[in-house]
Image (cartoon, rainbow, N blue to C red; front, top):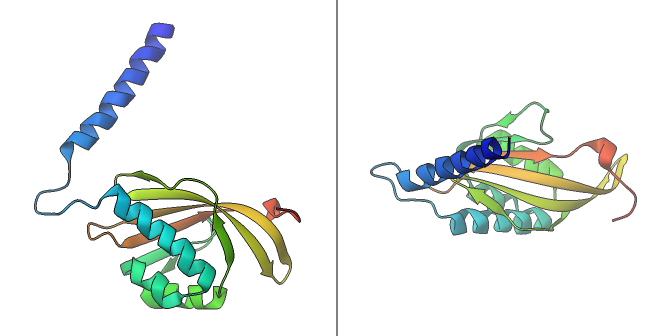
Length: 152
């Protein structure tokens, strides 16, 4: 049994190394993990400031937002802009490292909500997919209203 587990772990590790060894597609410059990490951190800064123009500058041509995951996706620049305009400035804080794999990233945040009946604190994980130009093509926010709590 232990040998099977070790073989599986080695296979998974080697599979990941093979993906890394492939590198970027021909003719495209690689988008670095640092770029993705920086864009995601900047997103949090813009979100906290209610800077819709800043947020939209991070998005690509036909973005989608699913917030929370399971809600109907918001698709297209105009619809995404309207979503962030309605949201306004949010009290959000990055509370851990931004993790990057390929052209995707994930980050843990805490948000203080003051939206009608939604009041309190909630832990959120945002995931983003980026295009070959380093622009966000998709953002998904993992949270559930049932997880809102009164204390941080």
